[in-house]
Image (cartoon, rainbow, N blue to C red; front, top):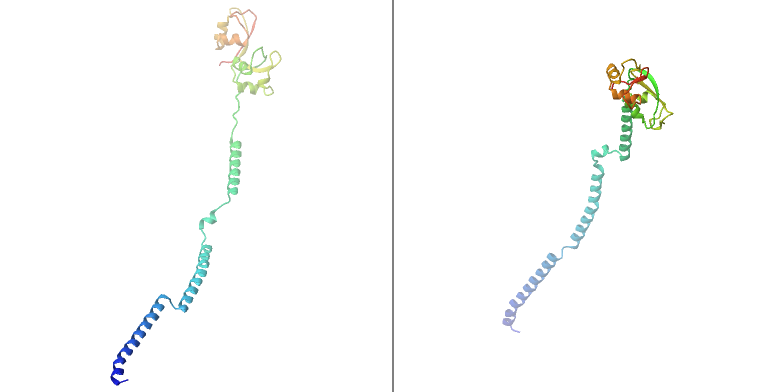
Amino acid sequence: MSENEESSKLPVITLGILLLTLVGLIAVGFEHFVSPDKDELIKAEKFVEIEEEVLPEASQVVIDSVQDPADSLIVPKDSIIRKSDEEELAEQKKEAEAEVVPEVATPAGKSHSITVEKGETFSAVARKFGLKVDQLKALNPGVNPDGIKSGSTKLNVKIQAVHTVGPGDILRKVAEKYGVSKEAIMEANHKKDDVTLRGEVLIIPLKK
Protein backbone atom coordinates (compact mmCIF):
# COMPACT_ATOMS: atom_id res chain seq x y z
CA MET A 1 0.00 0.00 0.00
CA SER A 2 1.29 3.37 -0.87
CA GLU A 3 1.78 6.22 1.51
CA ASN A 4 -0.87 8.26 -0.19
CA GLU A 5 -3.57 5.64 0.45
CA GLU A 6 -2.61 5.30 4.13
CA SER A 7 -2.68 9.08 4.51
CA SER A 8 -6.16 9.28 2.98
CA LYS A 9 -7.60 6.58 5.34
CA LEU A 10 -6.20 8.12 8.54
CA PRO A 11 -8.78 10.93 8.82
CA VAL A 12 -11.59 8.45 8.27
CA ILE A 13 -10.34 6.17 11.05
CA THR A 14 -9.86 9.11 13.39
CA LEU A 15 -13.39 10.36 12.66
CA GLY A 16 -14.82 6.92 13.30
CA ILE A 17 -13.02 6.66 16.65
CA LEU A 18 -14.36 10.08 17.63
CA LEU A 19 -17.91 9.12 16.67
CA LEU A 20 -17.69 5.88 18.67
CA THR A 21 -16.31 7.78 21.65
CA LEU A 22 -19.10 10.35 21.38
CA VAL A 23 -21.78 7.66 21.15
CA GLY A 24 -20.27 5.91 24.17
CA LEU A 25 -20.28 9.09 26.20
CA ILE A 26 -23.86 9.83 25.24
CA ALA A 27 -24.95 6.30 26.21
CA VAL A 28 -23.21 6.47 29.60
CA GLY A 29 -24.66 9.91 30.33
CA PHE A 30 -28.19 8.83 29.38
CA GLU A 31 -27.96 5.72 31.54
CA HIS A 32 -26.71 7.82 34.42
CA PHE A 33 -29.55 10.30 33.91
CA VAL A 34 -32.28 7.68 33.60
CA SER A 35 -30.99 5.26 36.24
CA PRO A 36 -29.63 7.04 39.36
CA ASP A 37 -26.74 5.61 41.20
CA LYS A 38 -27.67 2.53 43.18
CA ASP A 39 -25.87 3.88 46.26
CA GLU A 40 -27.94 7.04 46.15
CA LEU A 41 -31.13 5.00 45.77
CA ILE A 42 -30.22 2.90 48.81
CA LYS A 43 -29.49 6.03 50.83
CA ALA A 44 -32.81 7.56 49.80
CA GLU A 45 -34.75 4.40 50.77
CA LYS A 46 -33.04 4.28 54.16
CA PHE A 47 -33.88 7.94 54.75
CA VAL A 48 -37.55 7.33 53.94
CA GLU A 49 -37.66 4.32 56.30
CA ILE A 50 -36.03 6.32 59.11
CA GLU A 51 -38.47 9.20 58.55
CA GLU A 52 -41.47 6.84 58.68
CA GLU A 53 -40.23 5.34 61.94
CA VAL A 54 -39.47 8.65 63.59
CA LEU A 55 -42.61 10.57 62.64
CA PRO A 56 -45.18 8.22 64.28
CA GLU A 57 -43.16 8.15 67.48
CA ALA A 58 -42.83 11.90 67.51
CA SER A 59 -46.53 12.45 66.85
CA GLN A 60 -47.43 9.91 69.54
CA VAL A 61 -45.21 11.70 72.04
CA VAL A 62 -46.86 15.02 71.23
CA ILE A 63 -50.36 13.62 71.61
CA ASP A 64 -49.54 11.91 74.88
CA SER A 65 -47.79 14.95 76.30
CA VAL A 66 -50.62 17.36 75.54
CA GLN A 67 -53.45 17.22 78.05
CA ASP A 68 -56.67 19.14 77.63
CA PRO A 69 -57.23 21.28 80.75
CA ALA A 70 -60.93 20.47 80.46
CA ASP A 71 -60.15 16.79 81.20
CA SER A 72 -59.47 17.68 84.82
CA LEU A 73 -62.98 19.14 85.06
CA ILE A 74 -64.76 16.03 83.81
CA VAL A 75 -66.92 14.44 86.52
CA PRO A 76 -68.46 11.00 86.08
CA LYS A 77 -72.12 11.16 85.07
CA ASP A 78 -73.21 8.94 87.97
CA SER A 79 -71.59 11.33 90.45
CA ILE A 80 -73.47 14.28 89.00
CA ILE A 81 -76.82 12.49 89.18
CA ARG A 82 -76.17 11.22 92.70
CA LYS A 83 -75.18 14.69 93.89
CA SER A 84 -78.23 16.22 92.27
CA ASP A 85 -80.54 13.72 93.97
CA GLU A 86 -78.95 14.36 97.34
CA GLU A 87 -79.30 18.10 96.92
CA GLU A 88 -82.90 17.74 95.85
CA LEU A 89 -83.70 15.59 98.89
CA ALA A 90 -81.98 18.09 101.16
CA GLU A 91 -84.02 20.93 99.66
CA GLN A 92 -87.25 18.98 100.07
CA LYS A 93 -86.37 18.27 103.69
CA LYS A 94 -85.68 21.93 104.35
CA GLU A 95 -88.97 22.91 102.71
CA ALA A 96 -90.86 20.34 104.78
CA GLU A 97 -89.24 21.58 107.97
CA ALA A 98 -89.85 25.20 107.06
CA GLU A 99 -93.44 24.60 106.03
CA VAL A 100 -95.74 25.84 108.74
CA VAL A 101 -99.07 24.10 108.95
CA PRO A 102 -101.58 26.82 109.71
CA GLU A 103 -103.55 26.22 112.84
CA VAL A 104 -107.28 26.06 112.42
CA ALA A 105 -108.83 28.83 114.46
CA THR A 106 -111.42 27.51 116.86
CA PRO A 107 -114.61 29.46 116.27
CA ALA A 108 -116.07 31.37 119.17
CA GLY A 109 -119.27 30.03 120.57
CA LYS A 110 -120.69 27.32 122.72
CA SER A 111 -119.85 23.66 122.26
CA HIS A 112 -122.79 21.54 121.29
CA SER A 113 -123.19 17.89 120.29
CA ILE A 114 -125.50 16.85 117.47
CA THR A 115 -126.41 13.55 115.84
CA VAL A 116 -125.96 13.29 112.07
CA GLU A 117 -129.36 13.25 110.37
CA LYS A 118 -130.30 11.13 107.39
CA GLY A 119 -128.70 12.31 104.15
CA GLU A 120 -126.28 14.69 105.85
CA THR A 121 -122.63 14.78 104.86
CA PHE A 122 -119.71 16.09 106.87
CA SER A 123 -119.52 19.26 104.77
CA ALA A 124 -123.29 19.76 105.00
CA VAL A 125 -123.12 19.67 108.81
CA ALA A 126 -120.28 22.22 108.77
CA ARG A 127 -122.23 24.52 106.46
CA LYS A 128 -125.42 24.20 108.52
CA PHE A 129 -123.71 25.47 111.68
CA GLY A 130 -121.66 28.19 109.99
CA LEU A 131 -118.39 26.28 110.25
CA LYS A 132 -115.65 25.55 107.77
CA VAL A 133 -114.90 21.90 107.04
CA ASP A 134 -111.42 22.26 108.58
CA GLN A 135 -112.95 23.72 111.72
CA LEU A 136 -115.39 20.85 112.03
CA LYS A 137 -112.52 18.39 111.51
CA ALA A 138 -110.54 20.12 114.28
CA LEU A 139 -113.53 19.80 116.60
CA ASN A 140 -113.85 16.09 115.77
CA PRO A 141 -110.29 14.73 115.35
CA GLY A 142 -111.30 11.10 115.81
CA VAL A 143 -114.05 11.12 113.18
CA ASN A 144 -113.54 10.04 109.58
CA PRO A 145 -115.39 12.60 107.44
CA ASP A 146 -116.14 9.91 104.84
CA GLY A 147 -117.39 7.40 107.42
CA ILE A 148 -120.15 9.25 109.23
CA LYS A 149 -123.47 7.43 109.63
CA SER A 150 -126.87 8.98 110.09
CA GLY A 151 -128.56 8.31 113.41
CA SER A 152 -125.36 7.12 115.12
CA THR A 153 -122.44 9.47 114.42
CA LYS A 154 -122.23 12.34 116.90
CA LEU A 155 -120.34 15.50 116.04
CA ASN A 156 -119.17 18.37 118.17
CA VAL A 157 -120.10 21.75 116.75
CA LYS A 158 -120.01 25.36 117.80
CA ILE A 159 -123.19 27.43 118.11
CA GLN A 160 -124.10 30.94 119.18
CA ALA A 161 -126.65 29.97 121.73
CA VAL A 162 -129.55 27.80 122.70
CA HIS A 163 -132.70 29.92 122.61
CA THR A 164 -135.94 29.05 124.36
CA VAL A 165 -138.94 30.45 122.51
CA GLY A 166 -140.93 32.99 124.57
CA PRO A 167 -144.03 35.05 123.93
CA GLY A 168 -143.92 36.71 120.51
CA ASP A 169 -140.71 34.88 119.45
CA ILE A 170 -141.42 34.24 115.84
CA LEU A 171 -138.53 32.96 113.75
CA ARG A 172 -138.00 36.30 112.03
CA LYS A 173 -137.52 38.12 115.34
CA VAL A 174 -135.26 35.40 116.74
CA ALA A 175 -133.13 35.56 113.57
CA GLU A 176 -132.84 39.36 113.83
CA LYS A 177 -131.82 39.07 117.47
CA TYR A 178 -128.84 36.82 116.69
CA GLY A 179 -127.90 38.30 113.32
CA VAL A 180 -128.56 35.19 111.26
CA SER A 181 -131.11 34.32 108.63
CA LYS A 182 -134.44 32.69 109.39
CA GLU A 183 -133.51 29.88 106.96
CA ALA A 184 -130.28 29.22 108.89
CA ILE A 185 -132.21 28.70 112.12
CA MET A 186 -134.73 26.44 110.37
CA GLU A 187 -131.93 24.33 108.81
CA ALA A 188 -130.02 24.00 112.09
CA ASN A 189 -133.21 22.83 113.85
CA HIS A 190 -134.58 20.66 111.01
CA LYS A 191 -137.70 22.82 110.78
CA LYS A 192 -139.78 22.67 107.60
CA ASP A 193 -142.36 25.22 108.64
CA ASP A 194 -141.93 28.81 109.76
CA VAL A 195 -143.67 28.11 113.04
CA THR A 196 -142.46 28.34 116.66
CA LEU A 197 -144.01 27.10 119.84
CA ARG A 198 -143.64 28.68 123.27
CA GLY A 199 -141.03 26.78 125.26
CA GLU A 200 -139.41 25.32 122.12
CA VAL A 201 -135.60 25.15 122.24
CA LEU A 202 -133.84 26.48 119.18
CA ILE A 203 -130.19 26.04 118.28
CA ILE A 204 -128.77 29.30 116.95
CA PRO A 205 -125.92 28.65 114.46
CA LEU A 206 -122.88 30.85 114.04
CA LYS A 207 -123.00 33.81 111.70
CA LYS A 208 -121.84 32.78 108.22
